[in-house]
Length: 496
Image 1 (tube, rainbow, N blue to C red):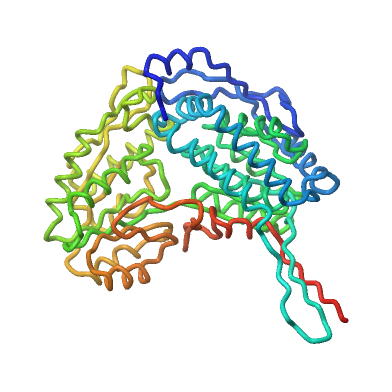
Image 2 (cartoon, rainbow, N blue to C red; image 1 turned 135 degrees about the vertical axis):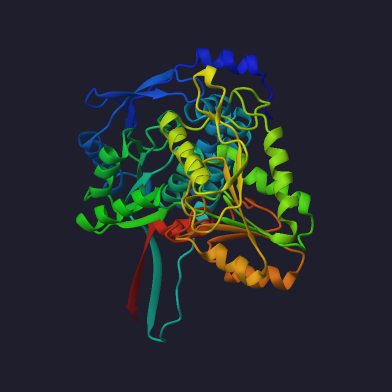
């Protein structure tokens, strides 16, 4: 439970000593000497000088991972021993939870309460889940023929390159790293240049937990340089990426231009949230819609940024969301009472404001928000924003904004709602609010999305898979299915 006060978090932030070295082959490495400033969106202050990795640093990290996979003990350990190592890492994440939550909050602007209660809980639970799963992944022995023995075995795929975003820097890194390690792979992790510091701490804790050198390496740097080098590297066997659809396309090209490595993509979203007149509780539906778009400053690929609401209840629902937006406490991420913190930085804030300006110029009606706030802090803060009178062809309804901006569209019948929901290049998630069981099943099947929430939003746990359809990507994070991405199936036929 989060117990520190605002002043206590401020005090700890001033005392926090953050190192920005790469973590390669079990040790911190400065790399070639080039650095960049990690700036906190909370107040614009520099948190640390971070090693700016390039081809040489990626080569060193991949070479370490290759040695650890080809000749080291990790892939050859009994699965239960790998699992115990992951459980030790989970325990260390729990022990350092305060420091890690503080780092996440400072580097990407997330409220400290969310960083501690949600981000760190997810990271700890992910390593525990895969630590416990490691020795429960079984092979197959089909009854193929009376005079033969057929074996189907899952073998670790090799060196995994994991490139992760800044919005959930530890959660999404854990979703990639933990199942890959449980399968027996070795990993080169590249965090976003906006959130490198928590990932570096994860790498150091992995070494402290007893993972052999080279099993988990962390290289910092930007996408066009370090990310590209990982994507093109011939000794990376699998690439797992979460980020924008545009960058996902680059990784597919990198794979084609190098060794045809498998590429698993979790990309953008423009998720619809459908509220029907028979929703079991319209106030709850509106409150959940508001929470879904404003949580994590709207910087979520699953954010229900398109609210599709029946004409008969549209104004009632919209008014409730606008009311909630006005009540939200936007403020210092280190204040436990803050409900919405800072966007990740000035460049991203500028992009979100551009979407807002375009929405107004295209004729959408701004109901609340739309401007930055708390400018005197030096931070990148935006008021929660709601538009209605949005039409499907508007930019607000088509493009992923990745900010606290809700677009309200209306419909008159169920077929129109489904058509509007599916009228997007994305297919990551969707929501539906109805009291009719048949409608719930039929519409859930009709929606082209990897996850459909009915009478809720953003619910689930590690036992269920997460991923998208269409241009929201392929493959799945979470659950036992995630391990499939990091293994190769081998068939052995023994003639008796």
